[in-house]
Image (cartoon, rainbow, N blue to C red; front, side, top):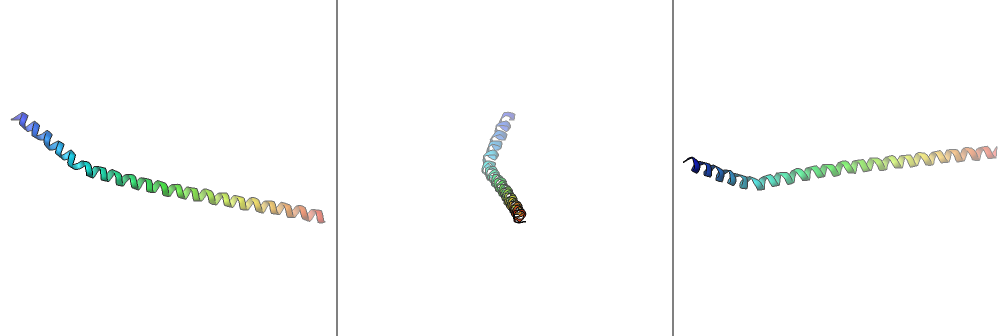
Length: 78
């Protein structure tokens, strides 16, 4: 009797695992999609911020170059 109960328990456990596998796979797939979507969003925001900072730095450098050029030009004309 005890051996039969053990065999039945193992069979039920095996069936339960087989039934749960597709739902676990779907859940894992969904979690991975959410993770990568968030990762891509963070990466995109970071890239935009870096590009914006680089553009601002180029503008500042250009303005400084213009200021230096015009101030030298003014000194030459005096």
